[in-house]
Image 1 (cartoon, rainbow, N blue to C red):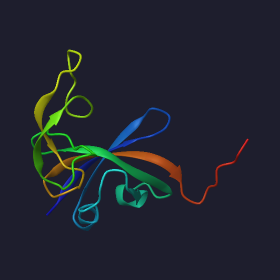
Image 2 (image 1 turned 30 degrees about the vertical axis):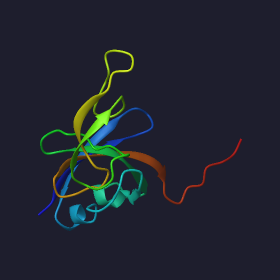
Image 3 (image 1 turned 180 degrees about the horizontal axis):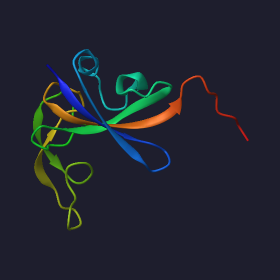
Length: 122
């Protein structure tokens, strides 16, 4: 049975942690980075949440540009999973794909907007 730790970031800079398992966790499996879900999955009804990333049980980060859900050794020059120390440095690193699978432990989410409320233009 899948179990996820959700880290939800709000626009005011605060974040909160929620743990889900069972049927709520099963609904996340197969979703990709960038997709939106309903906040009621995490107990935050009225919010819309966008998947921004995550990591697996061994700590390998998810990358948006890696397809699939498995671990892949990819040549990286920066971004998620690698911070180069010299200009032009590239290194082969293990990262996880952009699809949420049962091997994922932590899912990072961003609270985008409240459902039903329209934003006003100034």
